[in-house]
Image (cartoon, rainbow, N blue to C red; front, top):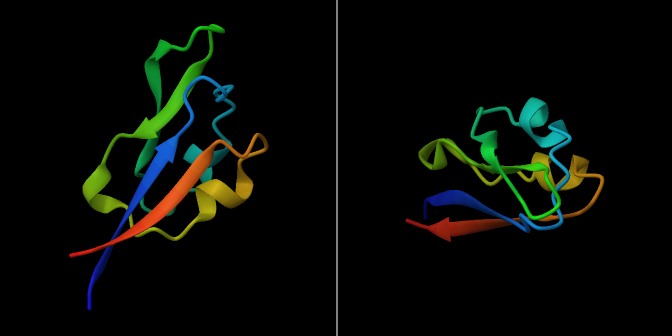
Length: 73
């Protein structure tokens, strides 16, 4: 059975620190050019097809705003 990864970011709580971006081994995550209501750019899946669901982003996130899912394909 094959799996694909996916993440959900709580964009309102994300402070745009970028720690998830540099710790993503597949370069899936980027910081948005848009900002949330607090004025921070937020993380999002720039290349969703590359996500393996490894969980590195959620582990290193200091604000625990990333949830990782593995989806059956």
